[in-house]
Length: 119
Length: 346
Image (tube, rainbow over all chains, first blue to last red; front, side, top):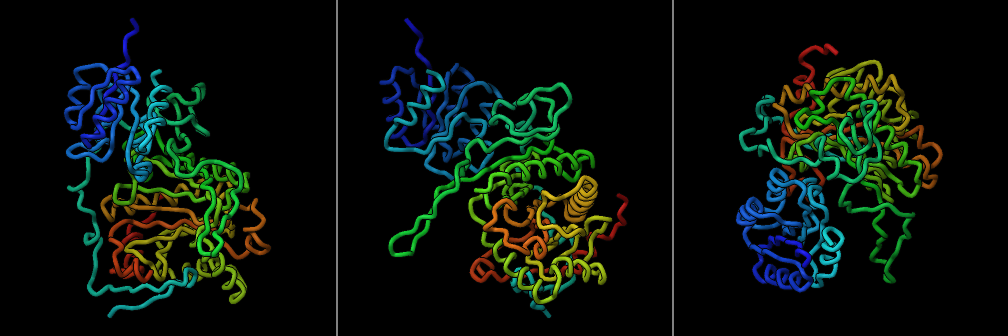
């Protein structure tokens, strides 16, 4: 049996975090989800992921700091930024990510981007 | 006693409120609050070329390939741009005539000035600064060929307080389908003042400033730097080419060399006198010369490209936002004095 691709979702809003986890599991991915960006970093150090989806505006460590840390340890993991804010486009640290998506009620764009990046 | 001064081209009044003897120390940024980026990932550093879109221009070591290490200056489009390339957009208006909008076309490029993450423009060699300036000219000239981009704005933000999100030295070029309001105002004013004084107002001001000397910070065979008569901000500077020209793209080889010396002197002095302040600089030039509607007859004679440098040493607050009227706590004569104090060895 083909091994499932493993995705890490980092989203501090609990309900959204659960929604992403369930929706992406339905698409056939193995999904690990956390609302805590520090916990996310621990998970990345311990386990291998094929893709990371992260919010930006989060307490303690924001998504851009998290991305910088990820790049320092495992720079080849593709990252999708999934945020409610356009304004972070001005921050060139976002370039470490492969995609910058604006949160939407429909997950079609997110799913399409995941498919494009990891199949 | 404070003084109200008028900027003849911008038509703006400022309050010069130098109530006590200000020293450069009064404006130095508090370095201890600066974020340290050391060791963090940087998408502009060599080795990370795959994190940027493919380069559109680069000055490289011989034998190196595009989008790999070995570059001296590298230009890439913005990965997540607010404006995207397209044809000339139509102007839409609502039936009641109150609302106007158009498609968001434009070009946004990032000029990565050096492979060295930690070496700011002030610390680069003259040869490297020349490469950056040649790159500015090349990109402006190439994008100008697409006349739907009616204005090209070249600028640099240095330091987080000045809006830079990464420490790696870079400048940006944004081409827009409209001519920005500030440029339109300068164009209108320059045209009127040319009619009034019978010559380009910038050439006239340069002559007067060089004659007077009290606001001159630097001068060489092709450029001069002055603190304007009515500056909005402490240590605000204007860099003017002595040869009249409306567009940066008309700069010549030998002038690029002089401009590199001017920039190195100027940025070096700001760094020394004001303890490496954050700053913004930007070029003001005529609208795209290939856009006939924006360049009426005579524009080439009455407009004069220049570069404005604004060290970020004070905050714009309610009074300035609400009135467009600025209070500057140091006179331009005093700031010019501090900046030119040591003799120019370049």
